[in-house]
Image (cartoon, rainbow, N blue to C red; front, side, top):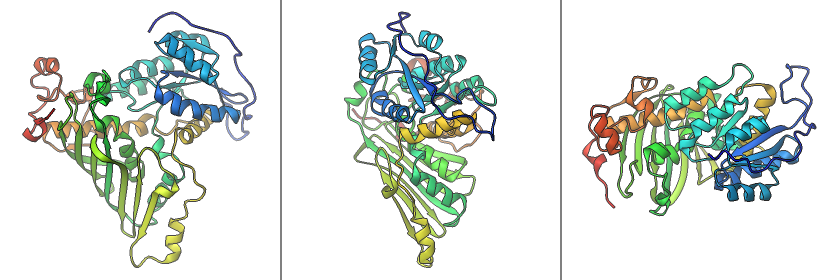
Length: 418
């Protein structure tokens, strides 16, 4: 980034937040608004982060104090539209001068590790768009930079696991109200044309990290893990069937969970009839979520087994007040964690679980093996690159330098058409 600072002006803080509770120690955020900065001013920042932050600002919780972007005109326009007092083209200078409490990282994936680490080292909590980083090695580096008790912590934007619907179903499953979960299906079948991949950083391992499993299906896979708990093994296939890219454009996987439940996972950018879906068959009922980019109570359906009493079904179908999944729903939870000095959901081991499953999916697909939870560590080539150096999948320069890094790719996975 450029080292030039564009603008500095405006008040430092506004002190009208909630007072410290007598039941817990005071935190640095008691009695004042949480100062927030945004790095990256593209569509996700404009369409999701700023509206959520503005809503909490209206409620006296947050104060959006600065934004940074390498494009000077863009960041100036962004700040003018959102009423943000400080605009920068250098995020390090912004962190040093504005000292935000929370940083929203809204840049392309390859930048996430460096910007998250910079924010943590500056003492700020982080809320980073998915994917959090490109590899498990990167994630572990971020986790190592987090503070001890009380933070700062780095949370991943996994907004689909928040809201009233996910909360209600998670409770029902946790209590085994509908019996044991037995069979599940997780589907992210979207459509992206060649124009989508014309953006230079898309479809490349070094800049996007992976294909639809990493960049699209990550949300539903995270929600599946949030509902069903830890996974134990995965067997997968991947294909490059349409797009001329380095990564896959479709994948399928069979996943076994620690509970014994079995799931299928499908991630695609080849599907004109777009849908995001999770279905879980339990002993006493099937619960299903069907939506596209976000869900509310009405998107969930519970179908009981024939012998289930009506009173039980009525309780299961009572989702309460509708709180849609959204950035706002997660941000509320994150701010509450900050004020309580507690590690937020979507950080640490909780945030790592989905990335580990995705990494294992790629390793299984590219090596034609079953991959078990916990087996991908620092000595594994997939720990530092999701392609693992596999012939037919790794970029040519990487494959040439590391001919033994990955096993041979099944023939079906090597096929591609323009």
